[in-house]
Amino acid sequence: MGDCQLHLGRYDEAEKTYQVLMQREKSPAVIARLAHLSELQGHPDKAIEQIREAMELSRGFEIGGKELAWYEMRLGHLLMNQGNLTEPEKHFRDALSLSSDYSAAQMGLADALAAQGMLDEAETLYTIFVMLKNWLNRLTANSGGSQSDSRRHRRFSRSNSVRSTGAEVLESRQLLTLFVIDTLTDDANDANGVSDGLISLREAITAANSNALFGDAPAGSADGDFIVFQNALIGGMFTLGNGEFAIADDLSIFTGGDSSITIDAGGSSRIFNIDTTGFAGSNHNVTISGLSLINGETVDDGGAVLIGDGENVSISQSTISTNHAAGSGGGIFNLGGVVTVTDTTISDNSASRAGGGIEVTAMSSTTVTASTISGNLAGSNPGNGGGLHITAAGSVTIVDG
Image (cartoon, rainbow, N blue to C red; front, side, top):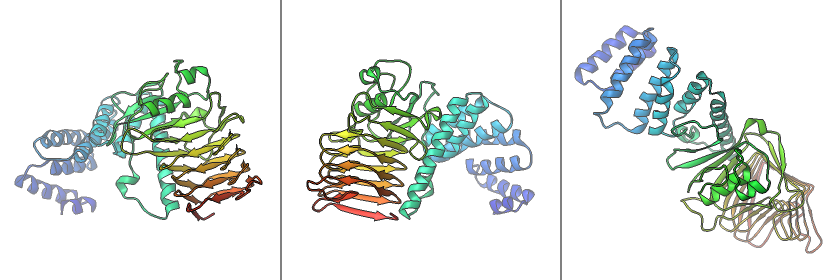
């Protein structure tokens, strides 16, 4: 009743209803409602005092982490609205430590950091928030399904401090590491783990594979490592200098846009070799989003991407072009994995044997959605499938192609 009166703007009646409830049982939930009422009536200091009271009282109740996180988040926002620029950060971090998928606290933390002048750190949080929201929304739209509100708004929390090194360990339901790439190099230092103050893609992938420090990259985690790129790098390109990127543990690589970062193999090697056999952790999912993979070359299969048996790989918002395999699968070779390709262009690739664009082998599954496969070529022996070739009992589904 009190909530209905509040929403109808009948504040005096709502307050009386809440006071009756307080006489029956003084609970954090009722005090929180009184705090909201105080805020609406233009008494922010009183609202802050009431939220603090609710937080203190909640210690004696069996309240879950999400509810406790809400109190921390509300206090952070109330303090910010009063011009307090330092204390809110602590409350947003405390909220995220209680419920790491809490998007309101995630964005509150970004706002608090921006208010303190820590613009680079705030921008990173904003970018990740928008990037993942857009990616999840795109997947939802393409799948034709829906996701629950909690899943759709899952976000990743900052840990104890915001660091300018471009990487940090984040707390989620499972611990994960976020790598922020700030250089488009692939030189000897990157391959050998020599520190130069910048995190390269090779350093990040190596650290994610080994779950150990490598060069300037922090240790990866058993589950859920993420790689993103600084905004200044978007639209950039780099050439492989140390051979293919071997992905041996679950990993997600995002750029935040369509084919936003170009990796040029220069005709010297394959680009990605995905094989998480023997991985640590509970999953071995690999996601690649927003990359342009060009000029890959291999003496066997998978000119740009080789996907091993049993892998679960998603490729979206990407371009795979002008790659070549002396065997099969000039663009992608799926050797028994479950592969999803979404909103991606696979063009002008070639294979000497079969599957100029994509080769799908027995016991594998490939789903291609809202993508373009064009201009790919297969050689003359046996010369099957310029765009896509299925071997034996492989499975392919094409949607909105």
